Length: 434
Image (tube, rainbow, N blue to C red; front, side, top):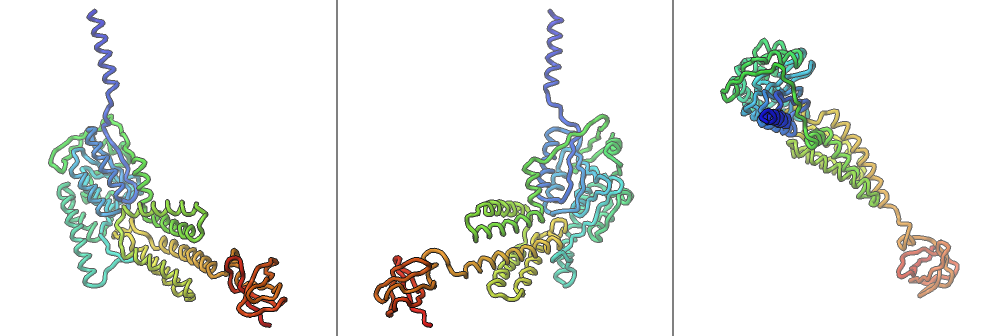
């Protein structure tokens, strides 16, 4: 009886252990693309999950041209206050951690790069239309203030991580880029690993000092990765918040809605256009918008309308295209070119939009100027023949039909007449003088 109880107890223990979810020892995520509010939300949620699951560390595979400063700061704040070590690994070969990515790399508990990668180029540029602002005392002073603020922020991070402050500052003040070997030589990163297996081998027994001062020794021997992925919502928002796609959705939505308003009854253009426009607004809501850019785009649409109505031989239309291109270039209010609408995209979007908008508007105005040819109003101006003498009353033949008619002056039968008005199915006619 005792042995049966022991066997039952062992079996119950095995079942309980098997039923208990095993926490992942090493969590892994990818930050591949521009740094925006959606990617920041994903990283913050991943760090929270890693802390809840008590993983060994969180590996962030990084490949970014940069992004929004506010999103970068939110990510760095979360990394610095995390109780789980974060390892930022710039990979695969050919990847980069530029601009905001440089700050994130240096803020990690362990900074690593794969061979053939680079980082740096974090100088904050003030730009108009994609061109750096350098002239003028005001522009120079503002640039110096922004650069000084970025440098101070980087120093506060790098000093706590025991990184080379002098070289780190050059990434901001001189927009210097570093290869993987240069970054390792200048003590900006902790290691170069050819792949993740090599990274795990180097991290075995590695001592990490968290930003809080707490020391942790990493154990990676025999551990495997578990991948954290974006939710469907995050993937969708990340897609529509891309500036170029949000722009194209907005322009397509405006054209389709305009077509529906001027040609009611098609339904599909209105439905699709409304969806596109709302998705565009949703995408731009995640981005810092320059309202001067919005006003320039509205001005461009006004110039397109004026071009059709005033027939300015293209002068207003060209002005509208220029206004729209400039508006699109400055629409996203960030110095990071990775998050802005490019010159080629702005031109490629503005010119076809202008042509399509002007063609549709011209067709609408032309149709409004045409004489009505149906219904009662369509009778006015038609020619006919007096079928009888007409004065107070009479009869005419118009368009093969006989109508009761009247006239303000006598008209003899057989005379050519023209319809001047119609009321209660009775035509007012005038004699056509030969």
